[in-house]
Image 1 (cartoon, helix red, strand yellow):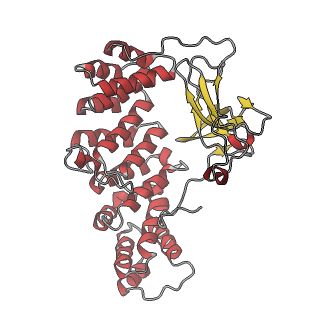
Image 2 (cartoon, rainbow, N blue to C red; image 1 turned 135 degrees about the horizontal axis):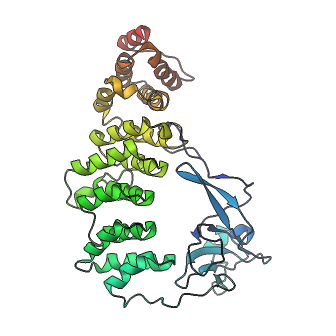
Image 3 (cartoon, rainbow, N blue to C red; image 1 turned 90 degrees about the horizontal axis):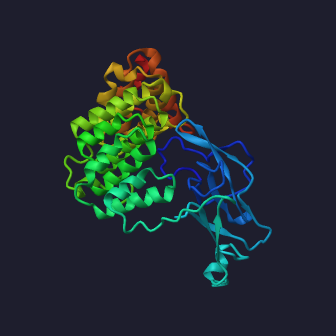
Length: 409
């Protein structure tokens, strides 16, 4: 259905695919185990219980997202009761698949206890000649041995090592992890970042260095973790998470960290990193959020992207009406209008948001934006947003100040 937020003014549709989609997949796991068939690395094995199969899907990059391309199913059954409902990476390098094995898949039968709880099955998906991992009890590993596992070729070993390091919080482990974050090995560096975040947290020096990492995933995850730690958790019932962690001020990164993230917004060439900056900016307060999105929108890569400009709009939307004065002040500076993405994607939505309720306060804010336009040509997108706000209803009761601003444009 449509977005629940009436001011979203845009939404992200389903994933693009090169195939005709005749399936509904509700869960999946990536084929990053050492015991899977050759060519499985990075592929998505997703579950389609309605059609009794497990897909084998290739991910094709598309901007900061991807599109899918289905191959021959990894598992297909002619038994209509075969219902794969869970799949996960196994310690031995294979994938484990839970089959509910039930003829009825509808909720009604479940609520009425019309299912047999004794018929479930578990399958192992592996390469026919692949060797299974045998060193799968990591509970007795030393901290140094767990750190070494962060570059293990089997994903289960890496993830389990991250979890154990985070749980144990061994004294002095941070030194080893910080060194590994700077590794030339992208996989080891990313897992070391995750482990360090759980074990000790990210200190400023490590975070700044990680933001300059040669590995896009490390840079992107550093931005995300900083937003999680210092930002505001909106619409989740958590509120100002950073306050609970004893961080102050809440909703603002420390100056050194903000400067490093802003530099990434201006210079990073990876669209996934730029997308994450837009996502994390929504968790920050306007003094930092707005400069970040303006810097992003001035990038050609962002302006041409299918998703990031919309995410930048949601940063502004999240701060209306609370930061109306800051928004007007921002766009009273001519340099804020330089970007075609700002003029074409952001400003029309801001005017539409202020005008759509028909309240005098919002309409007067529209007047200020019309007057702030550096040139008459740049008021056209404002008028487009204004007209969209009044689609299907008369423009009655407009304040004289707004009428004068529009006429002068």
